[in-house]
Image (cartoon, each protein chain N blue to C red):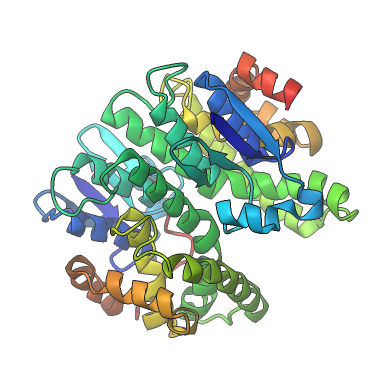
Length: 227
Length: 213
């Protein structure tokens, strides 16, 4: 398989940590960097693979697949028999994993993405962040995290007492918020969210992947290249 | 107990879930949530969906929220009956997931924003549309529809030559977009998107949803 991606970027990292949880090595998943500083993601050669001009994209035989959350679902199912189980162990488990993966995608991600776009990517282009936008979406993120806090006071992980794709999907954005944007308070001041964050971010697969984010975040990035 | 869906007829997410249930030939009861009086923020509703949204799906085994998660669950649980909606090979299944993600990440935001600005706002707030928001989202939606046009020139439906969950996810928002924004030409001017829209929106199941819900 080939993964076209941007090293250190949120959506590429989401796929890489899934591959790591499944114990895939570079002979099974080849990394092909896309040079976004040269605008390669908008060139015809790449658009033939990913027509929205976003990264990452996966090629597996005659399948070309994009959208990071579709790719991680695909890997979780393809490699069901090896590495960490990422969908729980029953149909009911799987349904709850999907529910919380959708929560991440549509309740959590919209707000944290905008905050990160302003505080990390806009500033890395030398532009001023839109502070009103940041405040609005911080407040919404806060309300969402209130729900997480109550939920995680009752169970260890989002979908139950097992680590899953739903927890994993939060890793890159929360890491960026804490370590790159340096705005950890929404996480740190909620004891159960913090405990959950410490659990999921201390997993060996994440600890192997995370340093790559820190080495590339000095580079200028363009927003809206990830999907 | 059977299947209950807590929601309201006007909610696009509720409609998409009911569409999947109909395609899978699953009987259901639509339990109205009194959203005008903040029924979706009541303790009873929050116990089912702590984010205070509709729809919520309930059967004898599980209570679920997030319409796309509900749709995957129903399509899988009732795989042996009704219309197949998930794809039948790993490749097809992956493409269904991909286009479900595209709907949620790239199609729904601009389409939903246009429907909000040009239709819902007047109903709920009495305010007219914000021209700047309309302009930005119309440009985004046009760019997305160009990609859909190219895709649908290659295959009859989004994930391949089979109708799936990926197509269903577009029904409710696009229905409002076509009927109430005055911008139906964005769809109608694109030959393959228009044909796809005509095909999926004239399915007997969708017509039933519109009549009875």
